[in-house]
Image 1 (cartoon, rainbow, N blue to C red):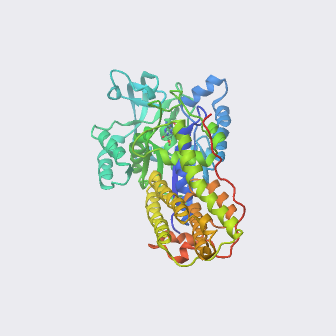
Image 2: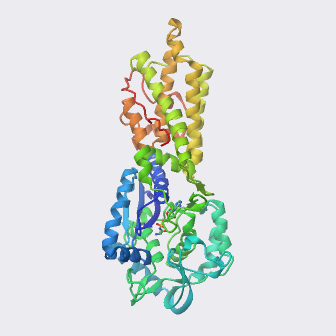
Image 3: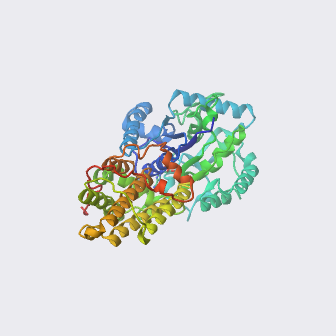
Length: 520
Ligand code: MSP
């Protein structure tokens, strides 16, 4: 049986409600999952919640409730946001699930039995916000960076994983697999970290200091370090230790942002290597949303609530903005003006207008019935050429999770379509008795261009795509296993593939897709 395409997001801390940063990685993963399904791949898309650890324990204490109650009350905020955002995950994990706890314990026992764990006394600095021991090397101008929050001095006896023993192997693996950590600047960052000797990883916390965690199976006085617990979610959710595990592992993509690069590119691979598991195929870290030049984060309290944006602009517009603006290699400033600009220009004006005027003219001039196309002229060839190019550019950008590029290529086609309308001026053709055949061709080409566009945008804006599908009255146009999607695999756009909507088909009533928004 072919392996399923398997994609993950980080599992988010439940110390607070989700913000636009969490929504962004989840949307990125969703777009990829929808794209793979569109290509016919069996796809497992996992997201979930990281519910143990100090942060969550403290958040619960602050609210005067038990940690479990706190988690149970926070989880619905995430789940309902994913629903509102049309997230199509088909697996959801909470680290307090009993199955997950058991797998974490099995995993630790395996590491222990393999001689990969030992106990020692440790003295050092600890960041509560990152739930990590940090070193003085991370200080800038004598201070720890703001996103680490409060950093305290600590002395403790703990269990350690022999991470340092895997350093040479890891460096070699990264060098031999240039596409493994993406983008390249992040890969270089990891290689840079690995130039210094790796320290062993503290994988336990004394119960006396932190009670809210998974007990270490070989010592009841300790709980598991939250990052070890959390990373194991990627295998516990797909049945590690059972036959079904091999249907999904190795993961095709672990999507993260750059803040959790070390945990995913150093801790996780060395842990997997230590128990002899295959590596995930790609760890892809996008940049951060900044807010007035600082990382947007709960710790810093400068967050944008996605629900406000969704309320005003709709989930699809938010999804579009996240994919169009958030970058792989660099950080992006989040600005509402920019959002409004994109909404009015790209969505309402370019895409919305093309779809609406194409369908309206077909209604007005041909009663909504798709006419037969005739002799090809220069403009027609150019339009088809543009669709053909879009397929190629879109396919390769999507395969690599380069959404900015994929959308750029689609919007080139949107622009081309709008130009095609202006070049052919159907309203003029409609007035000339001798131009009737030409008008047929133009209307046919426009409605088919709209159908192709609906498919291109479907992973990004699933509701808008299905609105187009219903205005076209073409159920099945966006079907996951629609054979016509095979067009992705052919080099040239043949007439057969161009003509998505058959001649004689009657479309429905056009409605505006994006009502224009003024600044509040
Ligand atoms: N619980 C850990 C992850 C464990 S994964 C095995 C954690 N949780 S978190 O709630 O802090 O989420 C971090 C992730 O949220 C980032 O890696 C990123 O995916 C997303 N984002 C949080 N803030 C962000 C920005 N300001 N910008 C973009 N994405 C951000 O770390």
